[in-house]
Image (cartoon, rainbow over all chains, first blue to last red; front, side):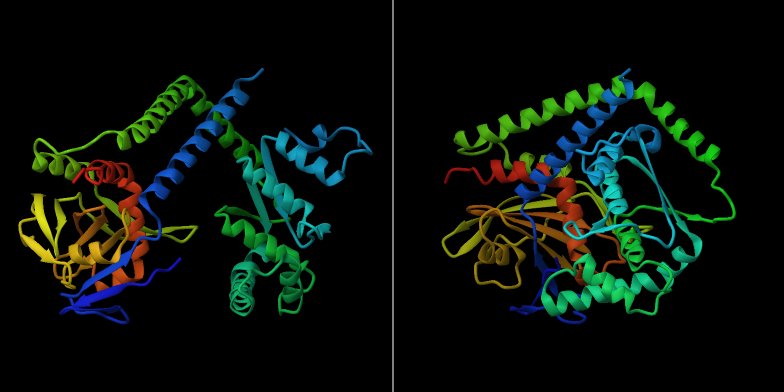
Length: 62
Length: 350
């Protein structure tokens, strides 16, 4: 999802449209929280771990 | 391993489509050959049986080898890919939803694509491409070099076999770290944090824990490096007091930070973060003149900022175009450390 970028210049904050001067302060809020990122990383890790264990068991099953 | 040999006698009580899917599940390798015919289209799932077999193989992370007849592959990349993308975008704009496969087939049937190819084929290939799978060209006059393919697959397997114990030991250790993370996360809110022995040293430790990254744009078949940023070289901590945010401590090269920023100062990333964000949200700032990304973390009563110097190739246009990528790399790489900051500094009792 595309988020908006804002620009702060000489005390005025507005949406950044087009090129901006070098000394402009640009900013954009995060789409995801840190907690959400960690949750997703841990879920992915857990899923990958399960997959590796299953595949190893399958590969060595006689 | 081979589909036909595993298929066995047909059992009339078993749905033939389900039987196909089950057999894919039991297979080790999924070989897919695509020419002009797509097979039976099932209305309910809006997919052909071959497509569903492919999805099953993909979801079960089977080794998949896809071969597409040369003229079809060429036409897909020359025409069909663009037509499909245009159709999807137009449909999304008009209906705020993705088109169904049936709708897509009708549209493709009416297009100028080769008429002897079932329209579903284009939809199927598009799905394969969007899943990031590479496919080989199938030349009907020349058989694929199976010996080479299977020899390579055997080599890959044999190379990994001796790593079994190492992989298992690593996974067990990761499970232990994961469990420790659960305990740590549960414990911290029950600890009363009244202060720190040396806040500067604490910030320096956090600073060293936040590392550099490379911002990459992934095109599926290839990747492009957009730019890089260096390890965190400074950290500041400001605390809200009355109408202002007062500098509590800083580390690294953050020497230019003002002693305080009034809350209504709209040129300060510290004030903007405190005023505009809710607790535990964060945002990324960039100033081309400083060639630095600033990750600002809004805590209950503080704002903590991490400075990441970036290459001279970063300018305002590039930041506007790739801000999500920058945020994603900084946060994905450093999420655990930032979370620790959130819990410790944010947990500080007034």
